[in-house]
Length: 173
Image (cartoon, rainbow, N blue to C red; front, side, top):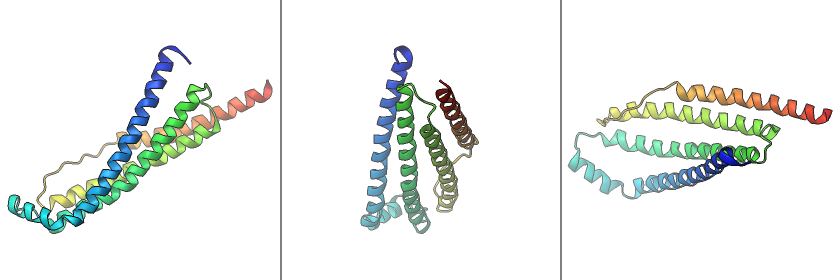
């Protein structure tokens, strides 16, 4: 593959790798913050009580910790998603995108996107909980992510069919 398409694929691979490293770095940071939330709890509590006495820390701390815990499956889902997408880009680079493995990869990506959407809903619930602790925070529901989940499941089916047709054509030749 050459020209603009080859350049776009090369840039896509680089961007996916950068995103994968960034995602893992975010995961490591979430883990460190979770551990630090216990180690430095007294110090942070004192700071909040001094600077923002209106906050209900009995609600805030457990909710933030739950948020950090739910960050682990989010980071894992994004890691799997990016890895599978990178593998698909590799097959496109070789000129063989319609292979059964890519259909499986797309289904995996769709399941990862579904998990991300479900976690997004849970984060919305937690935003409402921290509002009870007198913390102002926004959260928006959007259909775009849910449509993307459906789109990728359909695309996986298209790839299954494309791979089947390709196998049939190869058998006839």
